[in-house]
Structure formats: structure tokens, C-alpha cells
Image (cartoon, rainbow, N blue to C red; front, side, top):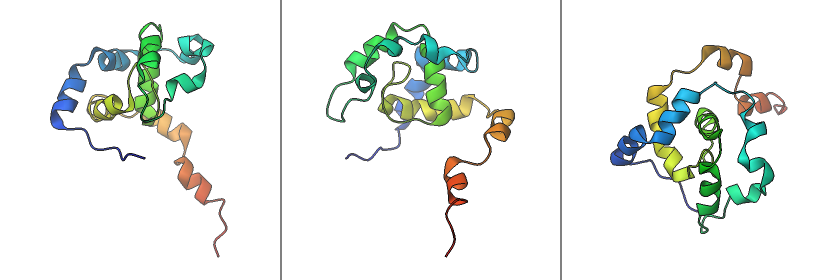
Length: 130
């Protein structure tokens, strides 16, 4: 298994200009039902999660033709998902985009209040202390 590395400054600079990221910023919270209309609904989900040594070209090509590509990428960046293909981007591309995303998009305080504590913190409350 490979370890993800921090994106280099030139990768982040390129991500800031990437049209896919700009579209995701525009379409953030624009369409709550984007998942139901994605091209991926008619394809085997494993297509979007290739093994580390396999190319993601097929998944990226499918995503490029999808109408909800921006909302999909915005969701992946919002939650910090670094696995699989989302919004026609690979995990490596999204790591660089994530740095730019955090600079561009302010967190939504309402979303944080509704979500409550992170899942890890909620799970820890279920573990009995010995």
C-alpha cells in the first residue's frame, strides 16, 4: 500500500486553475439530488475504485460526460474523500485540489451544527471505559 504524500506547491497552483475545481466551487450546495442523476448510477461501482496499480481512465472518462460532475467533486472535497474517482478526478488530483478548496470555500457553520461531532468522536462515546 502506498502512502499519500502532501501535494507540491506547483500542483496546488495548477489545481487552483483547474476548470473542474472552479466548477465544483460554483456548484457547491447547488444540487442536493445530484447522486440520483449521475452517470455512475448505471455502472459497476468498482469501476470508480480501481486498484492502486490500475489506471482510472475508464472512470474519469465516464465522469467527464456526467452532468453532475461539479456537485460530485464538491461533495468529495467537502468531506475530504481521497479514495476512488469523484467528479472526474483521481485521488492524487483531489489532494492538491483539497488545499485550494480549503482556501476558497469557507466552512458552512450550519452544516457543522447539523452534523454534530465527527463520526470517530461519536463512536468513542459508545466504547466503555475500563
